Image (tube, rainbow, N blue to C red; front, side, top):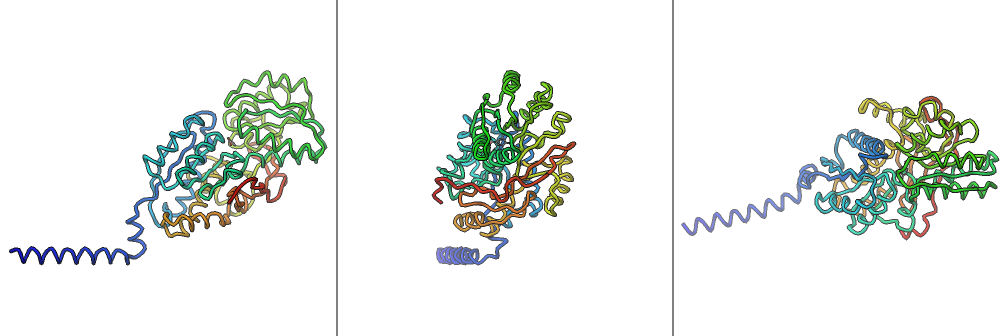
Length: 397
Ligand code: PHB
């Protein structure tokens, strides 16, 4: 009896060793199945003035994944979603929940620069892969750059730099700026001021109000009194809708040209209607860009979500395209971090915006278009700056 038991134990042990050895030789599919699902943490605003932006990013991201067969590097996907409310104070807790509780493999977010600054700190501290599909805080791909942090959107100063150049070329001499007072607005205005003044213009007044306030009346009164040649603003989402309507309601659109970073009129034209007509903005995207990728993307997005995509949808789509490049390079094995991030850093994406590459700090190098609102379209009327890249100031990568 004892002998039989020992024999059985020995057979069991041999079988276990054999099984372990065999599993090392398992074909790819089975090995990947053993790794389980790729966990993706979406940390985005789903309420507040940026709610529509978070939804468009989510839709764009999921569209690219669906076009990839619903998988990443052959593995199934599980989404974990948090509404970050565009609130920087809640950002560390929200990011930590996704990383520590849900154990996500990759964090995707967010819209608001203040929230993204906090998220990128948590991602750096935990060495979690982070892809930013909107927030433009310059520092994240500058002095705070990191091997595990990528951005598929823009940096805040890029749109301002492009518009300042165009306005100086149009021989405007004086400008007033107005924005929400936080990193996005400050850096957007900073970019405008830099290139406008380099081109011979002068910013005569910089106005701001706290995010996300929308009581614009006193600022409009001040602008009317200052009578600059042009007004440059950064607003987005619900706040942008209200600002453009208030500017027109005050009659200022008839006397002082309003220009802005393209967020002013992206995803907002339906609500802004007549008030937005003729506005000039600069952005790395335009609805009517006639390239095969954009045409296919717009048709697929419309079919899937029954609404027109905007720049936020494009940035979400490209975040997933970038992740697909990385995860494919390691055949689904996200533990191979060095190979994965090297592939992402070197990626050349076919984006609906045109071709997209990343600089050393992992920030987009892309064309910035000059657009004009015509009806419900941000019509591309030129390229303000070709292949704009940031100097990765202070980035040690
Ligand atoms: C930002 O906070 O970085 C931000 C928010 C909304 C935009 C663009 C930038 O549309």
